[in-house]
Length: 228
Image (tube, rainbow, N blue to C red; front, side, top):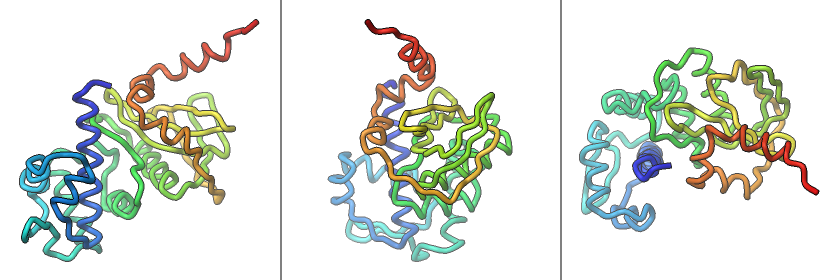
């Protein structure tokens, strides 16, 4: 992952967390945000004044909040309008009020993106939504992809890399990777799972994300390697 890609990922995560807290009705203190995100006050002021300028915000004594008070359908509509006017809507397949509501309601970071994705089919948009829901609720799914059927799959995160969305998941205690394009069906189950902390931290590392396009080749090579 290049330095620019890492910067875009950090920006996307920072903005999504800020928006979710504003919609939840929180008042955000600039000094606390600088310490939390490890960025300068100048960077955060740019976030609020330029990147979040389409939200109905008010600022008092270095603290920001939504004038509407946050929550409800109006907040979802405000975020959706903001995403479309700033071009951020193209980052998320099938972005609508339902997906916005789901993303705002979770305390986790279910997806990482710094790339613009084009040509997403309706079926891929539905898969994206179902995967986001499964990730945020730690719910196992049955996945049908090109030539594969995976039952009791534990989805960990969706990551955009070089214009492609990748699903990183756990299957039979092993990490697996699928592209969103090759997934035909996602069927949620009623079974939940507990994340493997080591794997969950691994999918955030820059070296792992950089290797996503080559993951299967690397995995296959390791399987075929015969040790004395």
